[in-house]
Length: 481
Ligand code: PLP
Image (spheres, rainbow, N blue to C red):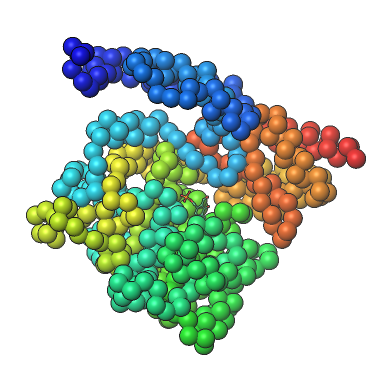
């Protein structure tokens, strides 16, 4: 038998040494990130083939892990923090956030109950109230009343738990016991995020009961009069409308649904209104863009993602609810092994009842670090800088008669070639340069390039050089038959 006592942990001294190496590695990575092609070019299976098929028998040094990260994994990394990453929406990382996340990992706590780490719960409450005030959200979302905020892993989860809360409210709690007994219907625009359909499926309502309401052709926003008609039709056939999802900043083109009009309809008819502002909501840190969140006084629940455009590493969705009782009613289950005096006193929040998983990470630490290290002014500057770049890019596109500007909304610019059929080849050619990463959507059935400007390190020179390259490629593709 081995003389060594199991388990064979890394020593504190080695942890310190490797930890310094990891921070050095990350600092070098971020300072050299522009030397990498933005989009990974590995083929499917290439990374698997380069890795051993089993766990090493003998322990290895962490240096080997770092070496393989360099040699094996790095070619398979798409560099989301590259300043010329313009795909999808940004997924901001920042140094304060990375450090906050590292501390959360290092503390290794699991904050399912207040009692399992009071600071984890209470910091989250404070940080969510801070952010609500910074975004100028309605007071009823603050923890001092019946509402409150929590950090979810994603906007998809926020939509799902909102739907469960809405079902709980609409059924006076029966949904918990009986499941779907009535024909509950859910409404969003044709542009609503795919997570809504998933939420409807996961809640057991069935996609036949999801109504996708047409949008205005110019604004791409939900038409409230069509929502009203759909609600009337459904009620006439015995359905129970349970939730409307309004988007502030749709994924495809960053369109804004008319939340005030939609909210009035929901308010009159007692329907839960969830507002999904996953990308755009954080823009309200700037007084210039406060109006992005107009109409929230009608919302029962609302979310926006600091992990997209507010400098906070994935995952961090900020989710607020106006009356937490429906959410807790929908999700609280209390087995004996979780009982404790603090929960029973009613004086504490147990965020396990606000989300799908039981366990929870100490995510507020990274958001706290971001809010403190940037301050309101730094956050405002971050957002405004990108919107100004997007406005500038939109101007260049507008004044080039080979292109059509489809839409510029906040940091997102959507455009195509006048010759629509050549737009996809243009996008593929631009991505193949390794100098940028763009993605696409379809607007009115037409292929459209999306260029989302919002990377933590994105500066004017990155947008200018991407545009110069796109413009040259457009010449080349235009000449090709
Ligand atoms: N809602 C909208 C409007 C989005 O744009 C996105 C993602 O881009 C989502 C929801 C999903 O976000 P998450 O990845 O946080 O679930």
